[in-house]
Image 1 (cartoon, chains in turn purple, orange):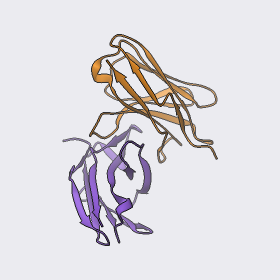
Image 2: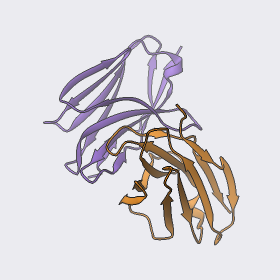
Image 3: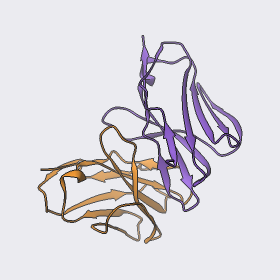
Length: 110
Length: 111
């Protein structure tokens, strides 16, 4: 099993809908998790981090961490066309190494 | 507060050549890490430097090497370039166990 796994998609949602992005992780990573957004041809930019079990909200974004199921998700409410990008899930290992998933491509249809 | 800057942004090399990529870290950050991102893939960890010492290394051969300088800027050197080394090389700065902040990347093409 890879350290971090994501469904590569593509995922398409209509404008205004909720986009749900998911990620699973292995025992080799620690309990620090991050979501990055990457526009085509650009570098990843941090959306949010989550360290504790439960939900963390920041504006239209909510990250959810379920340690028992080794599952991290990102919900984007009121999706906008500008949210169309690849979303990368990342986790920090006990050796201070970041592992990234392959990314999920999201398209928000106007 | 200055962000992470990388140079050059694009470069073309031929197989067997050597390349040096440079990165200036974000103000206040003491850790720099380098990633290789092939098309359609997530970033793959190459190595990390903390206070001028290599602090972790991914599954990359020794021809990938690096340095971190006292001002926390960093270099990535790749010797004996291969076609598969063509990728976007990303530098990220952070505090040791903190969130990564990426530069715009250096896109390397090996012919």
